[in-house]
Length: 410
Image (cartoon, rainbow, N blue to C red; front, side):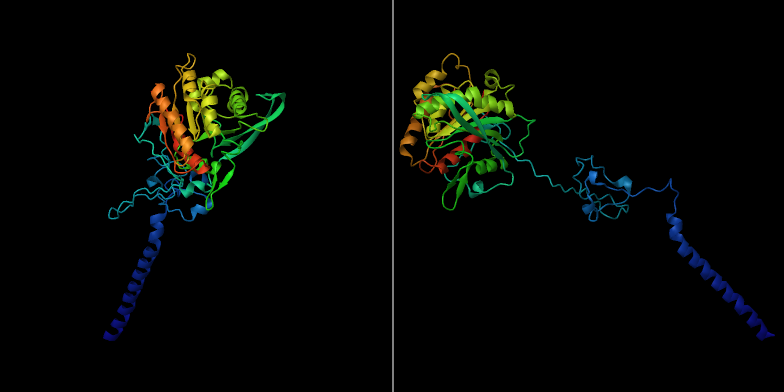
């Protein structure tokens, strides 16, 4: 009897153990599904960033996102704009994990501060202009990926100063800075070449200095790209040509063409501060028109730009050349010009260009002593550059002068 009782108890115990194991296994395997099963109303979809929200198909594989949609920071909030967010990390659910701040990576280049001079001092940061007296750094002679464009414009005239009636071909170049936007107004700078030059001298011609090749367009590209001056429209004008009988003819011709054709054409076809292309419209915007030149072109600045077109220009830059300053000062103090401000007068010459250095100094001093609208350090400067009567001097002159042209004065 004892033997048969042991045999009946053992199977019951084994059956209970097996049943318990089955129940445990069932709940272990079933538990994840029980925890994750939710109705469609309870479930939240995973956040998806389309290409309009700053993640392209190529970016989606590497974008790091936390999938809780309530914790994702909208791109418009906290100063993050659409298209800027490359990595958004939300606060972890566990309090023991450290909070990861929003990380923003942007491809936008930082804005470059362009000095806005008023009375010779930047109105925003208080900086005073700094001048170079030698070669520009090599980087200014290198092609810039942000390159402006130069286009040639031809026209005909029927009379030429000191040469008689007929039909003559004339032309000028127009430089538009990189990113030119026709919805925004631009200052206009007219540049005049020296003896033997033409419309290409300031903008297209390449000057070989051995290891360095200089081209005005490239230099202007770099000046504007580095934020050293406000981008402007530059006109490469022509004074004397083969039709001219002497320098006076070139001055008389160009000073008239600036009024009758060149400036009205610029205003009509490009975005400037002038309301219209009439002389009255250009006159009203003269604070945004300037003229500069070298050698014979500097002579034109005084005898043409100032004496004849003073009502159209307020900024003047004359390098390695000078007219008769007493005549110029006398004419711009005439009643019709007496109330027109001078925004900038900049001059200078090469340290080894002895005759022109002397003349520019005499002319500059005469202006300071006899023209009350000219004040040194406020709207007038003279800087001599190491060199002779050459382009390396004049390009440095332009580098020094351009940031100061079109400045505001009291």
